[in-house]
Image (cartoon, rainbow, N blue to C red):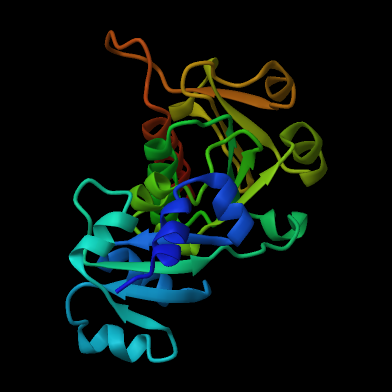
Length: 249
């Protein structure tokens, strides 16, 4: 059974300021918890309402395991339908952006992405295509937001998410900057080369003017039908797919 202070702490982690203050976030669901257990992330505790499988017990032998009531997990959960297991995870301190580490590959840059579901899907998609680094503007939604963590389905455990002043940082990286924009070069005819930064803009406003000014090549997904816009997470998936496809030629 959780104490009132424990419940208060765990519930508070639904808010960014409290996550930052305590350096902790919550991961819910068996699959996601397993992913984080098998990652470099440090697990502070695991809470469960049902007996754990031998696999989890073996992996978690050095982790504080607490069997709690369904009522307690409902109190700490951010989900409408709480899962049977949740992990309290420490927010890592990432090293400074290493320009050399970003060479000879593609990384994603997010300018003002606000929707947690989009952010989580972008992280999951990046993981699928083997992209390991995402650089975000300071006003992009927090990667440890519960909805982001849930939508990433464990992929967050393998992705480095940085937050920075993009106007200051991007020119210093020294890689080609490709921006997803409406009036750019057709994505299916674009030569992406073998390295670069793929910049995706805010869901409603696109890229900020100061970020647009840094873009060396604007790239567009041609519209064939009548939809007014394309979801940013889907647009990013198309970029990743096209880059991946051309790397096999």
